[in-house]
Structure formats: structure tokens, C-alpha cells
Image (cartoon, rainbow, N blue to C red; front, side, top):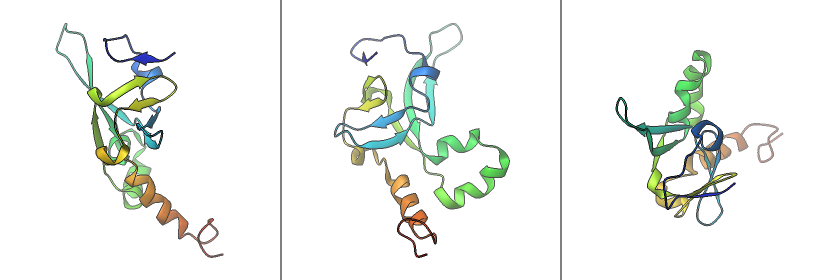
Length: 126
């Protein structure tokens, strides 16, 4: 089911947003939603204010063993995409603009380049 965001629909954050793929306006994969920023006080409704994408957002959810060495491989960058930039929520999260405007997919590209240098990988030497 696709939700337009012109009005404030009910969204199950855990089932419909967290860990879902993020697609830009040109249908390019931009990563996945690693964490969500919310606001709201006691007795007030909670509102999503931003999507957090990148290793800096998912590192706190990892076991300590991984959190020590993984930043050296993938970095700690976290991109904050304001919720107002989300055009729809469905099978994936669609953004209103291109990924470059948000600074997205740079971590994936850098990781791909590093992994490509590993012997036995598709681009690395055997």
C-alpha cells in the first residue's frame, strides 16, 4: 500500500520505514533507513522529523565487537534527510529529489571501491 504524504497518514514506523530501501526521484537506490529522528513531548503525538541513513546511524544498534572495527571499513557518516523530503512510503521510501542533493550513496560507492580491492572479489586480483 502506497501512502502519499500530502496529509498526515498513520505510519507504522517499524514495519513501513525502518530498514526499508530509500529510492531517489530518479529511481536510484540511496541506501536504507538506518534510524529515525522523532519529536514530541509527554502526552503529545510523536512525529517523524528525519530519516537517518548511513553507518553513523546504524552503528549504535550493532554488538560492541562490530562497532569497534566496522567504522574503519565503512566510516561513521550519517546523512539526515528531513521527513518533508519523503514523497511516498510503500515497498520502499521514495524521496522528492536526486540522491546527490542529499549526499546519499557515497558510503556505498566507497565501500564498493574498498571491497573491489580484496583479492578474489569481482574487481580485485586473484
